[in-house]
Length: 311
Figure 1 (cartoon, one colour):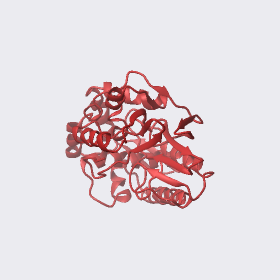
Figure 2 (spheres, helix red, strand yellow):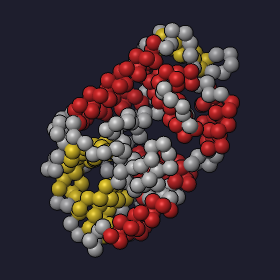
Figure 3 (cartoon, helix red, strand yellow):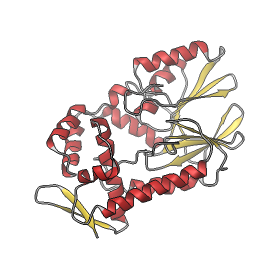
Figure 4 (cartoon, one colour):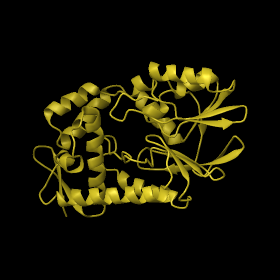
């Protein structure tokens, strides 16, 4: 399904479920996505119906049509508790949260022009997730969901989202990895204004070890990019990527620097406003990791900007 961003697509999955199909992830809640869904309903279901909707996590490209699909087919949404609550929180926030985000970005060195663009962007979540289910079926780590006569194990993994659910079917040797393991790009791990000191990168890296016991030749179905085999090699590459970024971050802190000053170190390309919000969050995720490890310290300057340096 299309996305109106630099990352221009999301993969959604239909699982044969006996008399119907289970949907995994839903796309943005926009008219063009729903038109594509209707074409699939008309031409690809072989007369069957949708019997269940699963969302791996609350981000709008995954959760955007959760309300519409469950209402259209009169079925339940299945997701983890933290993702369901996060979606409702994101939809209920008015632009009062914008002041918090603005102060967060300013505190970490974002300049006035970029601040204004981030302010004008505001909270775009309700526009991309226009409705939400009023109830849901709660999935927990280790749960087994029977789909098409096969057991799919729920694997709750952290760092990218509050309780991201990946789904593993041992019988089929398939892993629906969601956003947690992607074949080409790296998963966004961002620190946001409401939890500015979270060590999310440590949670993410620890969660990658959950996938180590899976067979190396498992077919991985990611949310972005092509399905692939070679899970263990990809896990090694992701760990090596973050180790390199941590080393580069530390090397750049011989003198005090704000997180925004590290963006050219970590991202060697021009960033639009949408990408900037994720990039500053990623920089902070690496800084918080290094701070928790005792490798860097932070101090608040007289100008109200936090700067980091090697311990």
